[in-house]
Image (cartoon, rainbow, N blue to C red; front, side, top):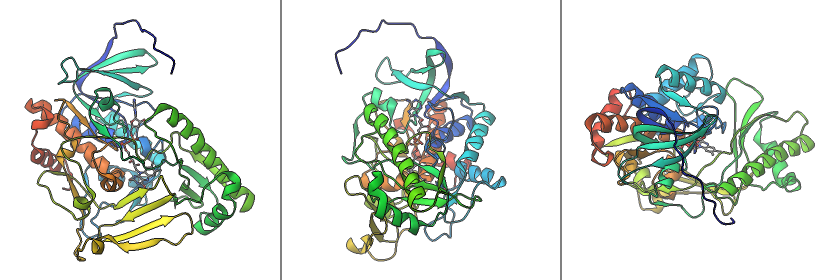
Length: 445
Ligand SMILES: Cc1cc2nc3c(=O)[nH]c(=O)nc-3n(C[C@H](O)[C@H](O)[C@H](O)COP(=O)(O)OP(=O)(O)OC[C@H]3O[C@@H](n4cnc5c(N)ncnc54)[C@H](O)[C@@H]3O)c2cc1C
């Protein structure tokens, strides 16, 4: 950096005015917007990409896990996640199973477009959130955006920060923290060619170094209904802090290098049939910073299934921490199982975290998170929601998946409507009421 330059003050046109602005059009943000619109709010949604869905579409991450409890007996999640799965299912675009719902991200793009238009939500695509204004430090009045029309202001009574990194919270100076070493990103792509993992594991271990690829743990899955086409998240991109602009640029280029080197390695040593047929338009970010709210989720309470009368989210996905420091990955499930993998084909370390804690085998079938995880105390009319969630390292490893964040997005939309209709700041809302309205709207809580 070399010094500062003075920018002339300017008058910025107010280009939209309504009840709620959602910044970030990932699935979390879209679900927040839709829930609020269903409760009568006039909503706008701001997304820097050309499409909605965030990591699920631009990042190609094609997997929503289970809507059921850990034993696959009782359905614990429904709401908009189930509605979307059902819509995808009508066109055969999801492999709907009790234990997982892999889908075609291209089809999700269309379903999210329909949700936005059907609910008369004003879309601002290709539009970058660029700043925020609060005259008194208690209420937000405007967000500033930049797009092909130049700079504009959106005026609203309520704001939801669903930007993933918490860009609005950052600009408001809200208290934040990181877990030191963040979970590394991966660059996802779809690949044509034999999807059996053993041949790929062999190639990475034997020839990866020639292509600048580490032997680290990754995952893949067959695309529903498309034999010979797999989703790949084989390569982590280590050593970057993606809340920083410079790191983000470098990691995008390094992530794509790894993807194409992976393809080149397979073509050279396994078969020329391997081809990348679609690559994500943005790097898949697992973690950056977190913002403090009234409640911090913690691993022990989560995995032992502590119950809350104001629960607004239920889930089963276990702790899943990708290690930045040693290429490994730690999994902990509700039933106590613990597995740590290091590299492709390495023997996993196995254990039982419940037994290590002196707990019996009577495990929780699902976990919950209370409304207060969404309540920042400083601003009356702002909710942060998404992967910037207030959670310790282990709880974040579990909560970061989409079915969980989708539900929290819905809760944020409902809370925005309750706050406006009742004239109450977020911190005074009843989480029990939020839960009630979520249930009336079809959520399975
Ligand atoms: C490689 C990888 C694999 C994963 N695998 C799974 C999986 O199998 N299943 C699962 O459920 N979860 C998985 N996850 C986790 C999950 O996908 C993410 O945690 C989740 O999608 C994050 O949702 P979000 O809405 O917080 O963020 P995002 O999906 O990133 O959405 C944020 C949106 O905000 C927009 N935005 C950001 N800043 C601005 C700005 N300044 N102006 C305008 N718009 C902005 C972005 O473009 C984006 O669309 C995976 C993640 C990664 C990276």
